[in-house]
Length: 337
Image (cartoon, rainbow, N blue to C red; front, side, top):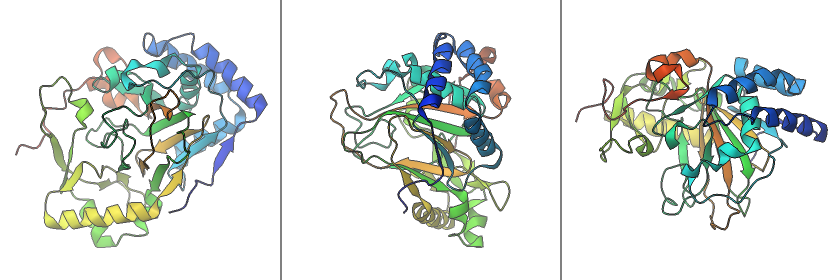
């Protein structure tokens, strides 16, 4: 496993000041109370971002990247308060960093959210929370977060996941892993790829999407295929904490995929001011373990979901808003035991 993504773009001090000035204008509108105005302002002002950043982001949107992501470094965050102890306080939505995130997200598409996930906020705080240290959730810390495609259980999943680091962990050990499809395919034989391309798998709905539904049992979605689309660059749909085969052959293919994902992974240790966009269609991502201290200086990322085509989820966004509001505990794709 290599240690760092090689292709990065670092902002100069002059560029940092220009970006921060634009972010201040975006943040005239709160991303919770006036998400539409916040995002539309960012989309308008994104044309004023430094040219080389715009070129890099548009190239990534069109062609992807060999490492499965786009890493921008040295971006301004504005003042950062103590790291909150709970992700649902939505502190990140009040930061200038949220405006910076919106500006760069605008180069790739439209920000959106899911109602069950932190009330549908388009900017989410990713930080360690007491009691969840060893879980397979974004708010864990002492356990590695298994490689996954974000919200693999839904057809409305993001094309890109934006992760903006505003504070690194104390020991500088937390790493975000990326496993791009190009590297994965090199390690898989054609029969395995063939099985992974068939609807012989199931995956569970994330527990955070079932709060308030009255369901505490696992909700399985399927049957699904893990790879779909072009043979040379298929789209991925899998979460190794949630996805399983529906038969023995599928289970073996899934295990071969898991090993290939591990072997193909690179690790990026995000610093404050680093913004990583993950290609959620063509790359797995995960996170290595770290030690939280709950002293106001813990690791803190702002996360956002970006879609290239907001209209795809129109039927699930009431009032043509930006929030997908779906009951994932029932529906045509739920497997009945």
